[in-house]
Image 1 (tube, rainbow, N blue to C red):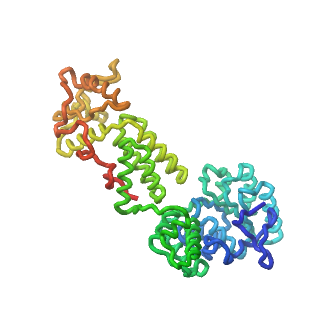
Image 2 (cartoon, rainbow, N blue to C red):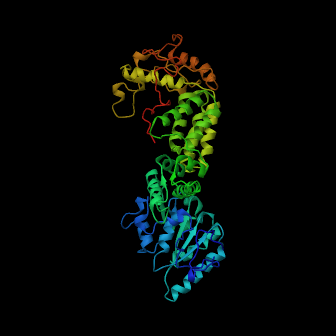
Image 3 (cartoon, one colour):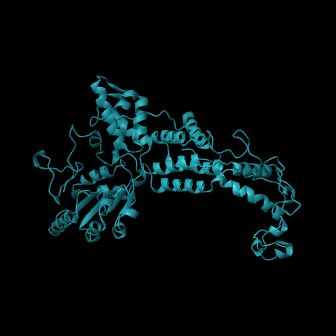
Length: 495
């Protein structure tokens, strides 16, 4: 069984060899000067661990796991670069436990059983307990996971498993129920920035041999996307590039050249954020899928919160497509759900599909305009009491007040539509919604006049504007519930 270079094991005299499958190790080897920067910068103790504060409180499961105060089996679930392997290193450093590491990419049932049998013999002989670390545990088959159940149940081994996949889908329920699930969060930008700065000055890292400009630092932090391993790998590459040029400062150009990713000019809290968002929305509104995909890519590469992008797409589906393609809202909300359940990078495809659909869909802002006109009337104080026939008649005494009297139940009519007043007296005849002839809304536009004639009666004339002057098709500069241009949306939380 190979260990993929992640888990080199100690040998007497400092010689590193890959031990046979099932061989035990007191822990990982210590780093050397030629180890990768992320390896050299691994915390030596819990006090150096950055992020995951929700798991580090006194008595919390993660702290108990590392200190060995409670022999609990744990599954670590989190995106890459959040510290799963680092936590395994900290556990391996415990002096009273034997530590065995394996990767689910290469280990099989035989390897797992060998470790368990050895651990059982040593425990019976009075030896130390065994901690079994399995990386990428979601890659184990059901049979392989089943082979762990009895040993975890009777604590022959203490299981420490790491996965980037949702364990509720990738780990069998019996094993999951025998373990404590710890969810690691992606590091925020401040956490990554702290670790990058530490690596620049710490003797284990670059030892102050180079400095980092603010622009280069921001680029590395943004490039990481919460993955500190990615940030430190890029930093090491940039430091090597600077050294090759005889420079002692890592500039933005050096960092870009080293990692071959251009720094996207995009300030998530400044004008560029709103400018790019505005261009994204207006490209979809203008039915240019290619431009919309470009702006989407700009936001994704810059590290924009995908949930923010998804929210804007959902808003756009109703604001600018509306009834011209009712499926647009379903596709947009499905993409937003995919962002929540799948996450990046795969959810980029879901966002892109939604963007292309919305950009190429027929457009109508008739729903937006209708809502704007209705809101204007309400804010102007228009709209009297609820007509008596529509009032709630279910509570005792309501009938005596005349509630529900005269109400006509539409399903009793063969057409399913009856003449009845649904609006307050001072809004009779107000037409808020005016369908266009775009896409599926054309059929709605053909049907709506007939519905209005039935509901309002034969005396209903041609469509009338609302009392406040609403109705009609408005352009981008008109009043209405504007929610999707360059500025923050009404009620929209900012990333």
